[in-house]
Every structure is written in structure tokens, then in C-alpha cells.
Length: 401
Image 1 (cartoon, rainbow, N blue to C red):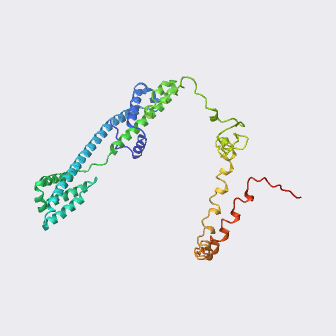
Image 2: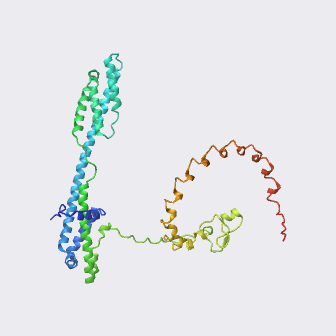
Image 3: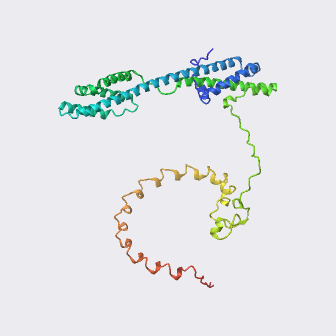
């Protein structure tokens, strides 16, 4: 007996859809088969533990619903695919006919443009308008119908029709009539997807998952009571997990162990002295620990020591209950006078904001770069002065007490 989905409570439908959307129908179908096979052998043992025969019947009905719903969704998908293919074919035919009509009009224009008559000039102007507005329609069927109609109207003009008679004008008009009629009567297919069928399958998926979990729970209780772990194993939910099992750890490769890295790659022990690239720059050995740490070294520096108190999450600085995190403190009060934008210090008309004041006058002598104080040739700027000679021995200084 099929499950009455229409008579199901809205809350139950929503719950089944939410659960079923997380699993694929192939996995739930495999789980239903596995659970039904286990019920055929151990179903009698689960009845005292909460899994009745009605639950098994509902599980079988949900499994059949999955099979029927899959076939129905496949049929709906195929029908929509056929509609889209037919509609696309009509559109491509319309674009081909449009290209033919434009070619006929282009050839006709080459003949009419040589005639000095006024009606020929008017026909050429109409052809130019039609050619300019029918270059492309994109994916819009409405715009394509409008373009085809404009081409049909232009080809039906007496002067244009007479000149296009020997260039396939009559055949182009007949093709335009046929494709305009086809596009007008063809309904644009609906969007991709089958939401109704998918929702139905999600409900069946949710029912299967619920019954499989209920059967596993009852099997565990029965296995504990009877002391038969195989009973609980028969109702496992491996299919819902995709049948994936943990891969065994890879065996270590056979053969001799890999060679040890060079000494320059290994970190020296605490206090060990070695020559390194930073030592080549400084012409002195680097101390890993216990001496002055070179600025070029990073890892191993005490500031990366995670045991330092500054990394202690229980430190008072991480206490969110500290008063400095209290949003009720007056310093967070936006009504405080210091947030008052009407205060005189925010008054842009104050004299201190007046850019015309003498202090902002760039013509003032203090801004004159030709003044002696800016003369870079003065002795004070001479870097060769004895006072700046770094090679001089330090001057002895006498401390007077």
C-alpha cells in the first residue's frame, strides 16, 4: 500500500524533507534493501524493542516509492529535455531564416541604390533600417519574432519585392511566414529541474532514514539483551555513509632508511655554536640559544615560546569581564560631551581653521628655501669634518668629582 503523502502533516513533511535532502536516493535505496534483508531474518527479535511489523511495511512502501519516484523524475526530465530541444531547434531555424532574408535584402539594396528614382531611395532607406535592427536577437524569442516580422514587412514592399523576385525573395517570405508562425505557437519550456519529484524523493529518503535508524536502535537493544553482537551488526547504516570505510595505514616503504639531512639543515642543541649564513654576514658565530639572538633567525626565538605567560588564555588581559570591556562604561557613552559634534572644537569656522591666516602663508620668509639655513654647502653640512671621522680614537674623558 503506497504511503499517503498528501495526508501527511506539514511538520512531518518538512522534517522528512530536511533529513532526506542530506542523503542521495541511491544510498537510501541501498540502505532500505539492507535493512529489509536483515528484517527478513531478525525482524521477530526487534518487535519487543520498539520496531513493529508496521514499520517494516512502511519501509518497504518507502523503498517502492523511491523506485517509482525515480522513474517519474526521469520521465519528467526527459520530457523537459525534449521540450527544450524542440524549442531550441525552432529558434535556430528562425535565425537561419533571418540570415537568408538579410542576404536577400543586402543583394536587393545593391540593385536599388543605383536607381535615381525616389521610390528606390525610400526602399533603400527601409532596407538599411531593417538590416540595422536585425543583426542579433540573443536568446530572446520575442526579439527574434520582432526581427523576423520586420524583415517580412520590408520584403513585402512593392519596389523591394520586385527587385528581390530574382534573388529568392518569394521563398524568403514564405520561410519567414512559416517560422514566425512556429515561434508564435511554441511555448517556452520551463526552467531546468524537477522540484516536485525531488521533494517527493526527499520525503521517501527521510522515511527510509528514520526507519533504518529505528531498526538499528532496536537491534542494539536486542543484541545487548541476548548477547549477540551479530544482530546489531546486521542493521548497520553503512549504506547511508556511502559505504566508505577508513583506509588502512600505508606500510612503510621497504629498503634502507633515507639519508640524514646535512648538518647545516639540523637545528643545533641549546647553547651549541655553529657557523651559518648569518655568521657569514656578521663574521662571527651564531648562538642558537644562550647568547644574543641574530635578527635574521626566526624559529626557536624565545618570543615563539608558547609557554610564555602572554600566551596564557587565563591571563587577566583575556578576561572579558574586565572593566575595560564593560560597554556600560562612561567612555562608551555616545551622549558624553566629548562626542558632542556641536562643541566649538568641531566648529570649522573657528579662526584656527582659517587657511588665510599668516601661519599658512607660504610666502612667509620661514618658507624661503634660499635662506642661509637651507644652504647645504655650509660647513655644518660637511660630512668630511673631523668631528664626523669615525676612525678617530675615542677622546679620553676625565670625571671630576
